[in-house]
Image (cartoon, rainbow, N blue to C red; front, side):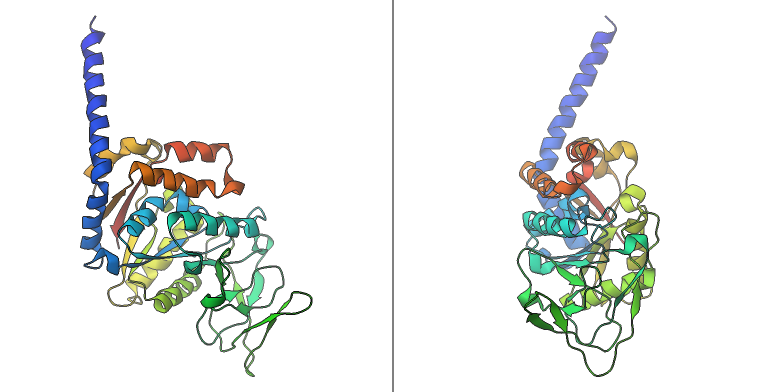
Length: 336
């Protein structure tokens, strides 16, 4: 009999949690708008945001609440993915899945860029020869030439692909020949080769200066005023995630970012909070953060559809993640 009052109390608490969650989900849009305006540009529709991720599927697994909320506020969005996710030789498949996922999240293919280092899992490849005038670069495929692909010629079903831009050569798309090859024309001055070392590998620490060079070029080209990436914990502790934080931290601390460009980092949480989904909403509201995004029910379904675009990654535990991860519903972000 003594358990009856306890059961009533628990039932009342669960009812309050459910009502509070429903209220917060309805109010989440306005909440995120106010906190975003406090952390970034005065007007949300003035935001030009670059989401910097490590692998295809990061944008849906971790940043969907941020991307969908920014889209709701009519911010302009770009995505820079710093590897093709080729650890299991699935890079080409995963790049296509990334474009499909971004389309669901509201990022057009012309604003999706992949730094492609296919073939680096078994050693570093001397991959680049490049640059001159800024545009998008492609060196996908083993032993391929460096090809500059202007954004206006980007195909709608594939992302732009970039390499480092440190030398004075200029490569131009000359069109496909009879055998479907792409040729590369350069200036007379030969560009030196650069060793690219950004493999999709949790055991490898990406070079901070090289990574920050890629990011800074992307910022300057697209007039970005808001950067979004992982925090020092990398959400899952993945070394490649943490490397992105280190690169943006370096740009911020060395004052290399353009004036007015802010950096938001996705707040890592403990394992229990990570897998209690919407039950983490009240806890998140009580925690300190600069920006809090909470998705509506419809937006949560949209985030799940984006994640399901990554069919090559949908192992059994990913289905559990989609159902229970709070990162499919909630993003707490902090300013650097």
